[in-house]
Length: 261
Length: 256
Ligand SMILES: Nc1ncnc2c1ncn2[C@@H]1O[C@H](COP(=O)(O)OP(=O)(O)O)[C@@H](O)[C@H]1O
Ligand SMILES: [Mg+2]
Image (cartoon, rainbow over all chains, first blue to last red; front, top):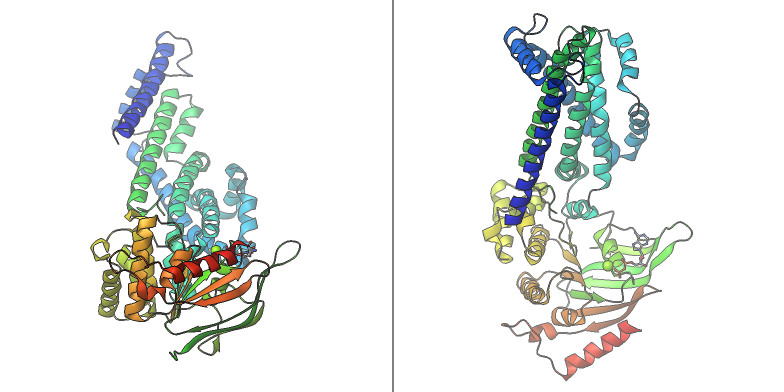
């Protein structure tokens, strides 16, 4: 136990050192003008820009609104993906006929670059929220769906056989055994899915948006406001880590048996 | 001794389909199981013991022959035949108590009745104190006791145990054997148990079936009553010449 604690402490130390080193390099190359400020703004500039964006917003819209609208898009898309991909994936894994219908469609669109089908989505759904959310939704759907299909096929046979011998019907089996047995994998895939959706956020906000973190970065790039780009990227990075930490905490609480048999 | 006939198996054959040709796991098995039998099945690995149990459980369909339970053909697994596997298949997302309550709950019994049944069987396997713990915190022997209680909670007509103590250490095993013997004597259950331990079979069973490999079939049956001669305290059989002779006989049959 003591060893494990030391081990974790050592690792945290390494992480801290890594980031201290990155900041030091960043500070030094800007301090000695090794690259243009247009390409790499100094830490000081970025902090100043951050403070001014927090105070006055960007382009007349407060930072919280930019962050809020991005998070809302992410949240709606992720929730939609969870409530559709989980049942569909579990059904596909459980009833091979459903799998035969859905699998190939998911396998086809999954490797496509999101921007490629975003164009089509805009054509069909217009340039406002619905195409953006659909893009994020599709990005989040595939990992959850695929994980659910494979989770069902990995359920221990004895779980199912025991339940049948205890009198479980098809419905009992699905809701009381298959679903909870797949929950650990479902949670892992939700974390992946939210991450993937987040990475497509910038693509979604590139076209015809007027707010959002992704849009802020794209807009700043048009005017070479590199410190704004940096602020945007750092906020996205930190919020991404926070979201994942939140999901991880939720996972630990709900899927408390994960890793145990 | 004219106990009710529960299970009747006649000329049972099971073929497993494989890529090239099918594998014949069971070939012409005849077996009648009566109320309060304690059947122990012995035989070399791969001789079809688990296949026979799986047919009785309803997990595997016979390729040929008949299998009747209380006179009726069996369509699939149901609550009449409770199963315990070698590795406990407890649901880790349910507490110990919820695991035991699973069968009665599925049956739709009233809550008070479900609670009473779970408490009764948890008490019978001496696990009331850990009822609210998740099963993964328990030792191997405790897990098997929960699995036993879960199967018993449905009050099945027959209990099917596939090497239930195979993964346990020697001492825990003796305690488990004592427990199962006691339950069998008190509740008058009918048990069909697979084991690879001749002493376990001799100290528990009333009927020992010895199976052979290719053809996978029952080659001999022994009717024994050593379970009546078990020391209450140690859980061990008083070994005598009769016991040793039987033991030799069975080992010779398995060893060929
Ligand atoms: N699902 C299966 N598919 C193909 N062959 C199987 C299957 N299950 C068991 N067998 C084969 O059937 C034979 C009997 O197996 P089993 O009943 O598990 O034996 P035992 O429990 O006595 O060790 C073995 O040769 C085994 O390889
Ligand atoms: Mg076996």
